Amino acid sequence: MQVDVLLGLQWGDEGKGKIVDVLCPEYDLIARFQGGPNAGHTLEFDNKKFVLNTIPSGIFNSNTLNLIGNGVVIDPIILKREIDTLADAGYDLLASNNLVISKKAHLILPTHQLLDAASESNMGKSKIGSTLKGIGPTYMDKTGRNGLRIGDIDLPNFKEKYEGLRDKHLRMLGHFGEIPDFQGREEAFFKAIEFLKKIKHVDGEHLVNQYLKEGKKVLAEGAQGTLLDIDYGSYPFVTSSNTTSAGACTGLGISPNKIGKVYGIFKAYCTRVGGGPFPTELDDEVGEELRKQGHEFGATTGRARRTGWIDLPALKYAVMLNGVTDLIMTKADVLDGFDTIKVCTHYEYEGEVIDYMPYDISTISPKPILKEFKGWKQDITSITQTNEIPHSLKEYIDYLEKELEVNITYLSVGPDRKQTIEL
Ligand code: GDP
Ligand code: IMO
Ligand code: MG
Image 1: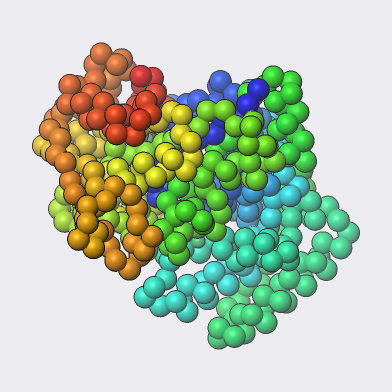
Image 2 (image 1 turned 90 degrees about the vertical axis):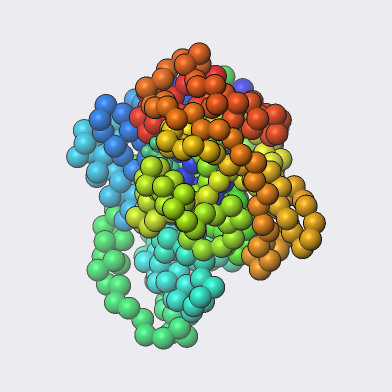
């Protein structure tokens, strides 16, 4: 058996949570492989809506086990809150036992968040627009070999280890200026740590490989998107993990030859939240209309998302980096009322026409060359069959498939689980 991977091809918020929830009945295990509570994955079904930050999106299917993999960074306070919220809604994970955490997943400390905030405010205008969840500083401690992991919370010297790292952070914070009070958060942190001892801690790499050996099906759930990848994204306006398919190998402990399908998910247009380059961004009423129709406000921070047309050079790059085998297009319904829809086919960059993302898009912005498509001007939110897809939308899909050289296997026409069509 192999591990299928589902990940975002743009700057995040492509609808990963919704689609993992749709696909999870086919799988025995859903495993998050990177990122942390900077993610906000939204699921809607039976008139209920949930936003998950750390918990994999297979959690509502009682037959699916959910693993928070070693590549994930965990804020105990946020994870406890997520588990409490689900319990209030009738999903008691302590009773159902369908969530496990890799012992090797790193912990976000309250001082990691303070460092994140201090670093961002120190950058002034060139700030990244981080979610301020402490992601960057936690991954820095991981690669700096200073981090604390979930497995450490069961050790007798955990408090000592915690204090050592906290005090190091406090010395660093002293260089930025006054240190905000974090006593309340520290107390909440230890309360949450005690709570997390009730969730099973596992050797995730053994668990996943054992599942494969037994012929069980595993889906790796990505967070963020390809263009936020630490190596290949629009650096430095990126997150601090590998959001691409290679991240599933290191983030779960699976070898590259165990990767099966790679589902690449993208919106029928494009959004970005936070700072950094966005060649197809629309700073006009069309962009405003996309934001309004798509409810483009962050699931984690509530910030307004920047909006623009779909960007083929960027998508081709994402397809290449991830080895995408199946495409999934979401939020097509958001374009229902548009007379025309545009696609960026190439960039004009330093006097040349190019079809790839140049190295330095952070300082020299490429100008998008746009191709126009006729809108379908029809409500598609209740269609369920491929033969109901309007002609103009079919043309749009065919064009994207031809350009990206991969088939679109699912089309999402609304936020609800049921609003998904297999093509
Ligand atoms: P994720 O981070 O990739 O899981 O995506 P988010 O949950 O942050 O953002 C996607 C948003 O779009 C959520 O509010 C979803 O409920 C919503 N959504 C997902 N698919 C569709 C769709 O096909 N149409 C519409 N209108 N909304 C969708
Ligand atoms: P999901 O999984 C959209 C963005 C932030 C910021 C940059 C760095 O819901 O798609 P960080 O908090 O990692 O230091 O922020 O990355 N970002 C996201 N944008 N969706 C996400 O996750 C994101 N996670 C981080 O806005 O620009
Ligand atoms: Mg999101």
